[in-house]
Image (cartoon, rainbow, N blue to C red; front, side, top):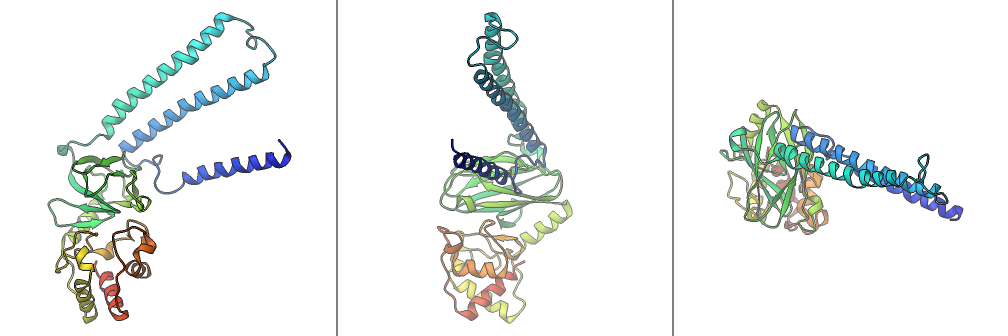
Length: 337
């Protein structure tokens, strides 16, 4: 290989290594556990990595040994001892892999599965329902009228039973820092336990390809102190606050009279659409379009005027509003807290 070729190969290897490191960065890591279930999964992963590392580096060692002794017969030190050679093959080629695989199988399929399997309803303090759509998450709290989207709120240090369903294609609910993934299959109800050791924000993702915007179907789980969670839930269960000014009243009237009301619900108004997310308390959310953009005025305006530019393939069409009506609707939506 020429000097230029070697430099090119080194550059490719360094680029690949940096790409792998960058892929591991962020706030959605299985190796940053915040519950017993996720810690068991992370521990299993480390043991599997260790076992794979032993095999990998053992193979590299044997390749290196074979290359350095390619003109010599027998093993270093031991020479041509056929019995020893056979014993090494049996030990490291059969016995060690069999024992290792059986141990990992037992741990993964009995210990870890028992810790991450669907919880018994009696063992959980509350149940929530998560419904997958193309491409957003609808979140309901049975026993209340609370509905939100793309942001799951739970009390910290509380066992929460999540019942997952879908209205269209197969999705997969996964919050790596809290538990394993579960599939959401049409006509089937699946369950998983969500538990957070401490208050925090944990990112989740659809883990099953579900269409063009699969990569932009994310969520956040907010684990809150119990008193703050209860206050949040009371607010979510209430209908929208009545407009407090003529400008906001006009914004609500424009919203209800436009195509917006055909797809969205705002409880306390005549808007009862079920295609898109419930917007009753839209202003309390931190993001729009399933974490695609932040929930700020400029982004909200862009989402209303041209959603296909932000999220191609989304079911939301562009809404044609005059300048004054557009500003009134923006003011109104930002008041929905």
